[in-house]
Image (cartoon, rainbow, N blue to C red; front, side, top):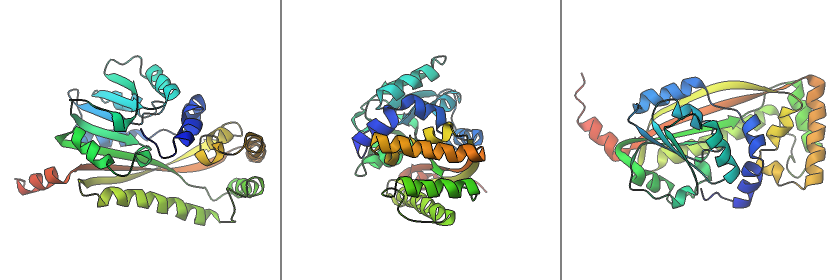
Length: 279
């Protein structure tokens, strides 16, 4: 993948690959059932995963029985994905950039889990379209991190503003932060809905809460690009301060809203509508 800001990718995702794999949330089991049913995935299906990361979603996709080709630009992350999927025969993990991926094969499903927004804006939908079978599906998934309305969150936000005022400059309430996260997610959804090549046939939400202790929550923050970019001494002090706050409270709960979008080519969808024989 040719990520926007390649240095940010290298630092926050691949360099801390083991950390990323240990603390990043997964995806609801029901989501993979919905993908299987909506896309008609079976043992004969071929699926391409864009930005496999450490294989968090790859393992679940492989379990659907289809043949999975997973592309990941980070060497360390790709290695973890290979290790996570070593017991399966129906998976290939390729280290490389999606924009440079070339093959004569066509896929029944192309998926991206919290990765599609990193791709070049200009031609990502066209490249996906070129790699899909005529009736194939584009599956896009995002995990969005919200804030819980709690005392520990309030104290974490206060310490964040005090430690890194250049990154956390305002005194926004939890509701304001969550509105911002929702607006960002909405922009991603609208980009998909408005593109001229694909038509959205399913949009579904799943809400999960993850609990992090004083050891794991700083590790989670360390996977966010805006934190990784901070000079090391400041970053370590900030993470230490956050750990102390969470330790006093025992844990911090993080609501994760997972969004699933399934699309088909507009041309295929219109053809299916025109030839629909149902009652």
